[in-house]
Amino acid sequence: MAFAPLAAVPAPEPGFGPWPVNLERVDGELVLAGHKISDLADEGTPLYLVDENDMRDRARAWVHAIGDGDVYYAGKSFLTPGVARWMMSEGLCIDTASEGELRTALAGGVPGERIGLHGNSKSDATLRLALESGVGRIVIDSPGEVDQLAGIAAEMGVVAPCFVRVTTGVHAGGHDFIATAHEDQKFGLSLATGAAQRVVTAISANPHLEFLGLHSHIGSQILDSEGFAAAAAAVMDFAAELIGMGIDVPEVDLGGGYGIQYTGLDPKPAIEIDMIAGIRSAIDAACQRTGIPVPRLSIEPGRSISGPAGMTLYRVGATKDVMTDDGVRRYVSVDGGMSDNIRPALYGADYTALLVRESDADLVPSRVVGMHCESGDIVVRDVALAADVSRGDLLLVAATGAYGRSMASNYNMVRRPGVLAVSEDGTSWLVRPETWDDVLGIFPDC
Ligand SMILES: *Cc1c(COP(=O)(O)O)cnc(C)c1O
Image 1 (cartoon, protein in one colour):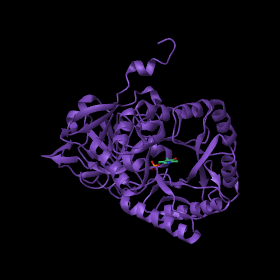
Image 2: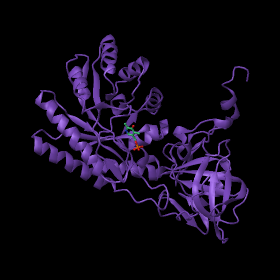
Image 3: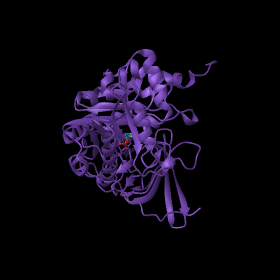
Image 4: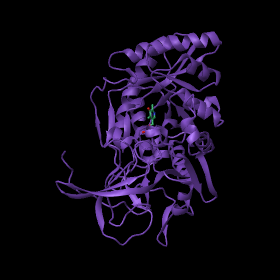
């Protein structure tokens, strides 16, 4: 095995990079919205912490930036009934991608008309629930879904509100976007092959379906508006075609994927107001070019709202020095891992970690690893940590609020950690920690 050069850097201090805005160091102690992290650890570790006001502020920034338009919070990044209530009170709608997410949003009291439903394989039961709940939009993702949804709507005597997800050929992520036909993936209906046009035509000809607009989602961790603008231009050209055929396109939904900082080395993404300005000017230009009216705009940010507001608190169980080709690397094993954050194992995602107590010890190249039976069970690939980190110490990992708890598993029969909301007003569970009864209760003989 080849080892990467040991170029570990320490996590930035609170106030910089990926940390929630209300995390600070006070007299050497890490404090979140007035609560000492070392006290919060008494709830048990691992533990997810959410800076409630940071998450609400991030949601509000998108609502402010979009102005006359809609922000659908992508629930798959992290959704609980409590989070749904926060988002509603900040003026957002909720984007769901499964029956479970739909049920969670409804349990949070979100009115159906403020919920969108996605999915490339929706069951009849899910579509029926969506129509019963009066969801505002169902995003059609395949040709067969037109007849499936129309049949259910006819049976129920309702008209189903439809968007159509198109693949524009723009695929963006990180810095780059590659304006080539990104056709070979499972989502959306191709503009290039005419599949999208056939589906829109079928919807608008069906009395049980109402065509409301076009949807596009180009990727994730996108840092500026360039890729969105390219996608918007392609969507608007298609909208002009449809309008030429006599089909109205009242709304365009450009999806999510707005990037965040995970480590101190990640570049800062564009601020919300600049992102939206870039998107709007691409839409306006296309409308001028083609002479069609400007559609209503919606977006679906997930991680940019939930990600940086969340952190994971772990306790160190063991340390070990391992020789590599480039020197010694310290392995710091914690009490969680790939069961509470699968992203490093799933796609090599990088994070950073901070020792909760202060230390004057020298920094050593370290790798934070989990307690699971996989060598790919990495929490933080490279970070400089104090040489005196040892069993019992607390480590805080930044930017785990999105796709952490929502992708958590019970691998190795662990109890999935709870999610504690923290604000100046106090703390409360968004998700309670699982008990051994939760884990063992699924077995018929337990
Ligand atoms: C995943 C997804 C989102 C949210 O993506 P983020 O990277 O969390 O912003 C929004 N819309 C659709 C259709 C998605 O699949």
